[in-house]
Image 1 (cartoon, rainbow, N blue to C red):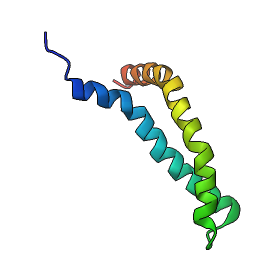
Image 2 (cartoon, one colour):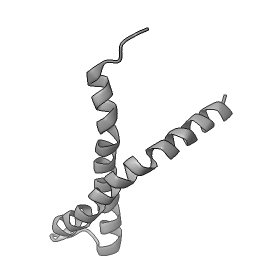
Image 3 (cartoon, rainbow, N blue to C red):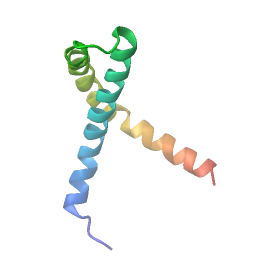
Length: 80
């Protein structure tokens, strides 16, 4: 039996957080741009929106991780 690499194991624990940070930053930017336009005040409005969205996205990523894993496994089996 092969030992589990501790670095890979820690990376797997951090992965949802980093995905949530990047995705929430991108979505906050798109939604802010659509709702308020892109002008000189855009960075401040985006940062405000992202400061609310990021913690919520991190919590959601960890809460929905088991469900997302099961869905991915199901889709993988169905797509063969």
